Length: 450
Ligand SMILES: *[C@@H]1O[C@H](CO)[C@@H](O)[C@H](O)[C@H]1NC(C)=O
Ligand SMILES: *[C@@H]1O[C@H](CO)[C@@H](O)[C@H](O)[C@H]1NC(C)=O
Ligand SMILES: *[C@@H]1O[C@H](CO)[C@@H](O)[C@H](O)[C@H]1NC(C)=O
Image (cartoon, rainbow, N blue to C red; front, side):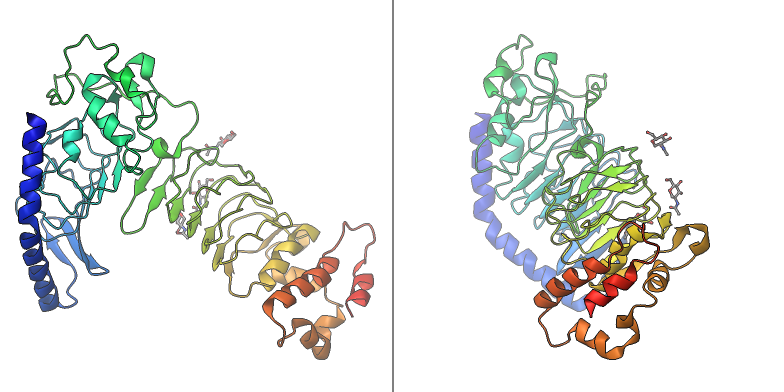
C-alpha cells in the first residue's frame, strides 16, 4: 500500500515537474544575468556562489540543526556537511526543485523520514556518510529517479529486516555507485559485511524483533546508537572525508596515519594526506586513484619512496612532499609523473652526495616542473646550498657546460622530445656518478659524452 502511494506520488511529481523545472530554470537564468558577476551574497551565515553556471549554497560547519525557510530555492548544490542535523522530516528539501547535489555528511542523522527527499527529481548526488543512521529503506530513494551517487558508509547500519529493501535496491546492478563501502554494524553475526555484497536473505533471518520490511525507522528511542566497530586496517572511506564539490577530494589530514590507507576511492582528484606519520611509500600505493591531480604528503615522516610508488598517477600535476625526512630520490621515482607541474620539496634533509643527482637530472629534463625547497642539509660543507649549485660544482669541469657549441648540440633544439629524452637519458645516465671509489670519476664520463 505504502509502495503504491509512493509510486503514485512519483508519477505525479514526474508529470508536473517538466513545466515547473523549466520555469525555475528560466527564472534562475534571468536572475543570474541581472546580477551579472555579483556571485557572492550572504544568506544567514551561508555562502552563496556561482561556479560553472551552477548555484551553490555553502552552509558547512554552522551548527545547524535543520534547513531554514529563507534559503534561496533555485540552488543546484546544497552543502550541509559538519552540522548538527539529527532528523530529516518528510519534504525537508521539496522547495529546492533544481537541486543536483545534497551533502549531509558528518552530521548526527539518526532518523530520516521516508519522504525526506521528496521533490528532488533532479538530484544526482546524495552524501550521507559519517552519520548515525541505523536503517533506511527503498522508499527513501523512490523520489530520486536521477540519483547516481549515494554515499552511506560510516553509519551504524543495523542489518536486520528493516534494511532489506534498501540492500536489495543497492544491489541492483545498474545502481553501481549507490551505497558503496557501507557496512553492517549490527547484529554481531553480520558486522563488517558490505551492504552491496551481503546476501540479503540474511537480513530477515534472525529477526524476532517485529521489524517489517519498509517499516519507518523508530524515533530516537532515547539511546544513542553504538559507534561503529574499530577497523582492523585503516580504510580511506571510514577514516577520511570525501567531498564531491567543487572537486572530488579525499581529506585525510591529521589522522595519525602510519600508512597510505587502503581502498582509496577511484574518482578523487585531490588527496590531502598531510600531517600524518607516514614513513614510507610502497609500490603502487596510488594506482586506484588514477584521476589524482593533487597529492599532498607534506608534514609526514617520509624517508623512503619506492621507485614504483607513484605508478599510475598519469595526471598528477601537484605533489607536495615538503616537511618530511627525505634525503634523496631513488632513481626512477618520478618517471611515472608525465604531467607534473609543481613539486614542493622544502624542509627535507636533502643530502648532497651522488644520490641526489637523479633528482636534479630529472628536473633538468622536465623544465615545466616548478619546484621549491631543494637545499642541501648534509654534508656540512654544502649545508644551505641549493642542490643545483652543488651538482654544478660536481660537474664543474664538464666541457659540455663550458663549451656553448657542445652544449647546444646536446640539448638538440631540432629534435623531437622523444628522441631527445631517449638520448640524453642514455648520455646522462653515464654522467650520474657511481659510488665514489675514484675521487674524480667525472673525467672519464665527460670524454664519453663528447
Ligand atoms: C610517528 O611514529 C613513530 C614510530 O612509529 C613514533 O616514534 C613517533 O612518535 C610518531 N610521531 C608522531 C608525530 O606521531
Ligand atoms: C599541503 O598541506 C599543508 C598542510 O596542511 C598546506 O600548508 C599546503 O599548502 C598543502 N599543499 C598544497 C600544494 O596544497
Ligand atoms: C612539520 O612537521 C611536523 C611533524 O612532522 C610538524 O610538527 C610541524 O608543524 C610541521 N611544520 C610545518 C611548517 O608545517
